[in-house]
Image 1 (cartoon, rainbow, N blue to C red):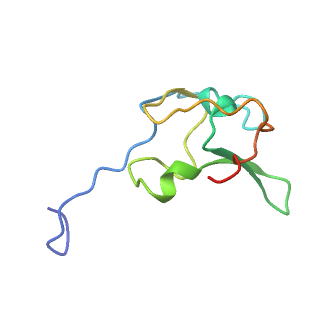
Image 2 (image 1 turned 45 degrees about the vertical axis):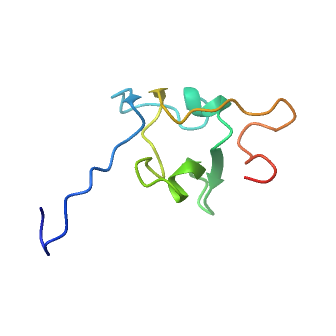
Length: 91
């Protein structure tokens, strides 16, 4: 237990990520590039991030995983008609 009597929650990245500090967020998302739950987020300053939509309902998954993701139990292939970086219709 940590702090206020609450059990410690283990927050984890996807099962395997590279430790490369110079990973290219725009092109090297690893499994995220083909995952139905990955969505590309852009900031006004030009930064780009991959958001894991699965993190909204399952806190085990990091909202913004370290890239490139090499292994992930939650990976599901993107439907053929979906464009890379867009959430699939209906979720």
